[in-house]
Amino acid sequence: MDAHPSAGARELATLTDDDLVTGEAVALDLPPAGLAVRIGSGLVDVVATLVLLVVGAFTVVLGAAGSSGAVQTIAFIGLTVTVFLVFPTTMETLTRGRTLGKLAFGLRTVREDAGPISFQHALVRSMIGYVEIYALTGVPAFFSMLLSSKGKRLGDYAAGTYVVRERVPLRLDVPAAMPPPLAGWAQRADMTALPTSLALAVRQFLGRAATLEPASRHTIGADLARQVSAHVAPPPPPGTPPEAFLAAVVAERRERDARRLAREAQLRHRLVSGR
Image 1 (tube, rainbow, N blue to C red):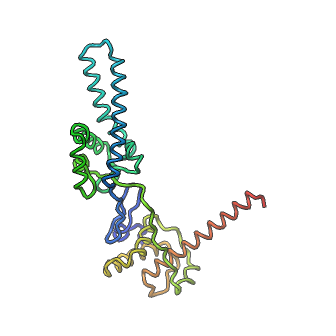
Image 2: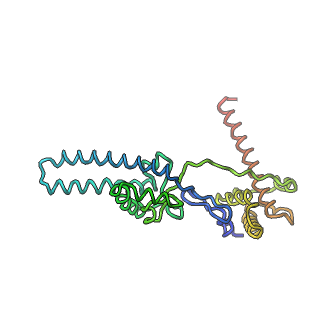
Image 3: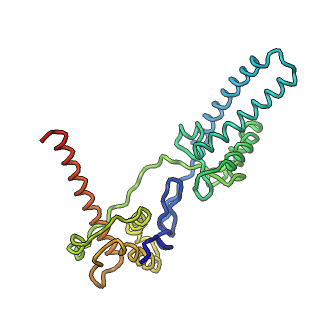
């Protein structure tokens, strides 16, 4: 049997550092940053940019002293391009969507599909940002973020991006309980570790099955059960409902992991204490 997650599991979970976990009634969207925190982050970036501009201007004045007016003009143009375009574009590209302000406020710029932005995205945001933030004193950016459901400024619309909050409270679903009729079978079964995406899909499904439509609940549960069965032997007793089978596997794996961690902790204690 194919052990790779199929469509049902992908509806529930596709988890990487940069992905959204999406699906019917089980979406885990990265929360868009609010207007207040976007303004705070922007002010930090503006201050940092102006400081860099002042330092650069002072350096240019000293370095170009005695040079012709044309050389000084070229130097100041280069400084402007570097400060307002090259610096923010490079930083957002290398940090995968972060600036000084975003780092301070726990924000990150992502694509519309929540993936990491590229150089092109960062460049477009910087170019539009110079106009809407510095040339027009931030007024267009403010009203754009105010009216957007995702707090997007004009640069985000042009680049196909938005800003998300990374520091959000962690909410965990209640662990699935072991179905009593399957406790004996689960203790004797041989269970290998589930792939991360499949394990996440199962936990999400069990925690949110009650919110799904009956048809989707049955289809996704049966699909996940078929995938999980490739990692479990022997199979559960005939007639076992898919949700009960999934709950038994998750609960038993949790218990086995807890016992393993306890044994490792005891071993470390004995090694440290010398007993």
